[in-house]
Image (tube, rainbow, N blue to C red; front, side):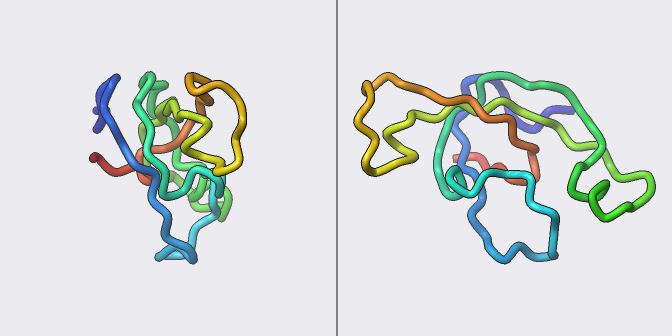
Length: 96
């Protein structure tokens, strides 16, 4: 069952090093940044667990999160409405 809804504002967790140790699947440049849930992509086996060869990992919901590019890069000189969409698993997101 999806934890977040389309249009909801979320923040990407920024802990590093992560606890417990994980195989990071979330781009560094979006950690700690806020975005909007653009869509729910479905549930999939946790790729961080799969990276360690763990058997039968739990499923996690995957979301496409939309970020304003000017919020990601201080020196961004593109348009104010420029966006980037990134698919991020629910364990990296928190509600705002």
